[in-house]
Length: 215
Image 1 (cartoon, one colour):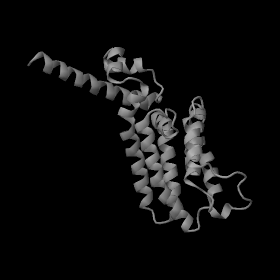
Image 2 (image 1 turned 60 degrees about the vertical axis):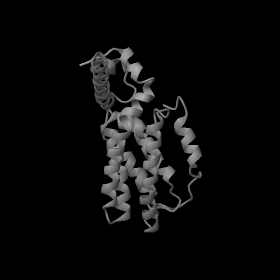
Image 3 (image 1 turned 120 degrees about the vertical axis):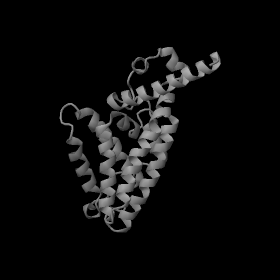
Image 4 (image 1 turned 90 degrees about the vertical axis):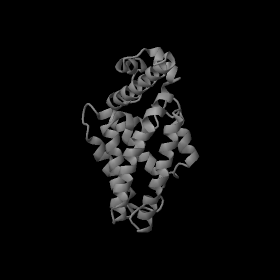
């Protein structure tokens, strides 16, 4: 084996170790876990990590999009198989929130805590477009209040992410109560007085999620 081939193989092994260590650390502690800890788990130096990934967002983009997409895609498929439009929508929302509650990394991803991770952000945007169909189906069936938008759905995930982080060590299932209250408010039968404010526009939602220091 030539020296060049050996070095390339060593580099590939280091990359695989870093990816595996990052996925494990993110799943356990969220996307804010120190990069030095990831390097230590992988058995490489911090310099090796930074040589492969210029910053945290680059590492997140390398690891997280596929993991998030798999979970959300499964939730969408399970919801789309349900005949009742309202049940389909609520099952989808609940399954995504369960992902948030069970996995700190997915919670950070869904709530866009690291919005500079461009690949992850783009993937989350695409998944929300898929959810739009569930909303339209429930609205057409007369089960969803007519003024509900896909941006309101993102609000549910956003608020759930905050509740999950705040109550994880105190009452880890309390997010379910808050979600039930919010979902009940989206039912068509709940419409009474008009909502006090218009929904966020897509541009406003994007700006709010990208604001530094929001969390």
